[in-house]
Image 1: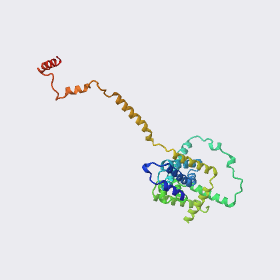
Image 2: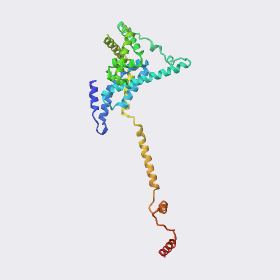
Image 3: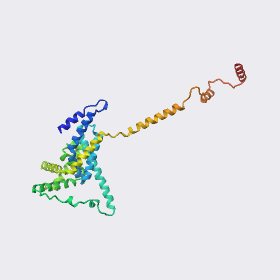
Image 4: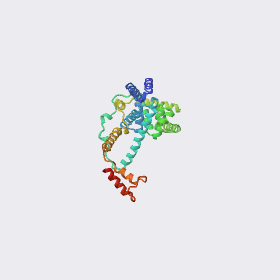
Length: 204
Length: 111
């Protein structure tokens, strides 16, 4: 993180006449790579919980990366994180809405075999033969229960919870990423926490 | 109590993220590289695409104007004559007996 800030600091020096040298472009590229690699796994997990589909989650993360690089690379590096998560949050909401509309349309059509069934690979889906220690099993159950509970939260509560608790954005950054007031963030976060406590109880 | 829940959920999500499979991590790396590659090929602003076309159109209009403009030694513009006739300050050539005088004056000049 320190190296990222250092590189970004150099990049953010003013440019003469708006023209960047090759060295500055290289600095930008390195700083962006460090930034993206520092957030990509968490971003994927957030998208995965919101979309409940790995491929869709990867698409959402790639779109957010692309948009940040193409549109906001010249912004100050301190702005990248809230901007990135704002793009990602919007992308996830778009995909959730599109999926809801598609679901309503599909409900009117006659049922047919899912494409997923055609691609079903029993070997790939089979549990690993490797023996699982009791502790690992316990952890798996806790993670599974938590992720299911988070995935069931209303979208805005889910975003507020993941950005504040998991990604560690402060209230102001979360409000920026969600495009709402700080008061709304606090409300969504509090409700998410209450719901998780009620659903998970002693599971985690 | 609330802090316990927050810490515990954060810990579990961190653990879950650390367990991402190799295929997912590889695809994330590919996505990152694809995004960074787009930095080296910046998207041109849409309006900038029209700059060369606009310049070519302006040059074509200029060429047409130059081509069809007045040539040296060309006949005077008939519009100028019309302006002289309708101008209230212009001399009146065809009124009363003065017409005969102007015809005589013209003959004298030619002879």
